[in-house]
Length: 285
Image 1 (cartoon, rainbow, N blue to C red):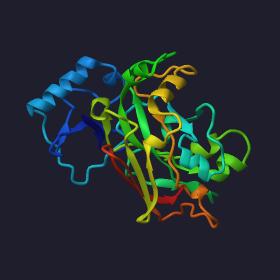
Image 2 (spheres, rainbow, N blue to C red):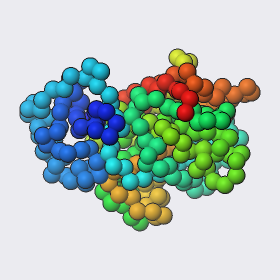
Image 3 (tube, rainbow, N blue to C red):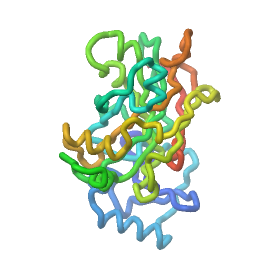
């Protein structure tokens, strides 16, 4: 299933995109697309049955905003330097263990919402990523099979980053990762049954129509199952939590001087195979 949330910020309603590309209203069946729904197998079965029976009312998508596909997110866990190509372009050796950092849940916005360039920023960068959506409470997972069984689905994420704040201003990466609007997510949560191999997905990103990133999840240093298993050893993952799994090569930081960092007025578009496409216009904060 392709689950999504549509409507104004803070007032999104649950929806489903059916096999014909028609937007269907789920409001009569579920309150929201969130951890509560994702952890409830019977509720998800009811949604599947209703979709299969063709009884869900259609929504007019004209002018309708698409919000983040998951509501009430508890936390966003991110994996840094998780592609061989990205590590190489930044001159760093592949890490021996996953690099883990957090983004606040309030950085998450819709896939086509405006991204704000922070005040004083000169190094705002792009990062297309595969996002994992957790569907079952996960702690101390032992095997890759267990890890994948705790995944509800996948989505496109844009891990926007300010490199000066992240690297040159002291402390941890948090300052460069948690600026307002720095995690567009969606358009859809695609359930795990429709993504049989998360290591077989292409990722692409364009800036002002120019292809900048053209990667593949097979280049991940730590694949999806290992990431979920690893993170569950250090923190409890709850239904509705998000894991951004890193970005392939092609970011602005890895390019020759003058590095083409993002500026107000730029347009970024990104996609992951089967998971949909995002488009953001950048404006000044």
